[in-house]
Length: 246
Ligand code: APR
Image 1 (cartoon, protein in one colour):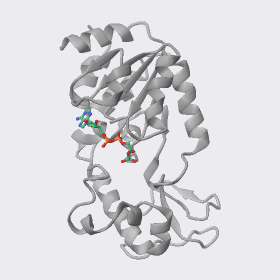
Image 2 (tube, protein in one colour):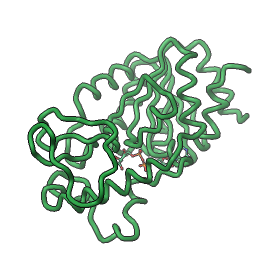
Image 3 (spheres, protein in one colour):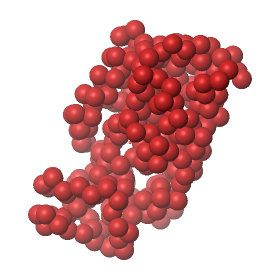
Image 4 (cartoon, protein in one colour):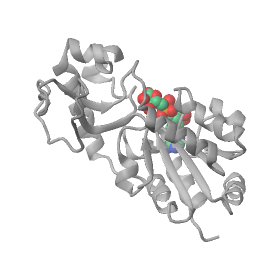
């Protein structure tokens, strides 16, 4: 075990409330391609503004629907890794452990995390474009083509993710900020810390007096405010960091 993991383990001992902020890096070892990775091959010719904005969707619903159908297939084939599983198992160890994720792949829930905030939504969810309230969690496999119509109001349906230019769900964001304010330890795993407002959560936790532990193989801007910085991959670091037995 590295020195940094041993130090971080000591900081976790006695913690009652733990908040965990995760990003794309925790799913790297599950083989989930990042947003950037999915803009390859056939899809390289399209701009993110065509594929991941409401304007892009309205301009060409079937193009965007096909891209998401393909991404859902990739996510469906991926399995949670040892990092996701270690976080799910650790829920039982603390009075409260909440995972706040920027990922839309749903792998935390599939690994068994129950106390979860999906800040950017979930790619497996389908919602009504006109926000009539329709939402469906595991959409049936739909043939590529035009997106289906909302069974309630007849508008298009769209993926239940936060697109560029959209606000995060205010309730989810408030919940996440409250966790950051009240946790003893915030664990920050596999995020570059560049995309706000999620990237502001570790600073909020630190200001409120929490210990901040980062896990990332690469340096990031969040290292500056970390109490302990662990350089390593999530699936390798989280099991020894979080297992209870010494
Ligand atoms: N374990 C831990 N961290 C890793 C691993 C790994 N195995 N592999 C890569 N990383 C780190 C990278 O070093 C990088 O710092 O994960 C981070 C991923 O950064 P980003 O790709 O910027 O992902 P994220 O921080 O989640 O981005 C936030 O931006 O693209 C949008 O909506 C998307 O939710 C995403 C948001």
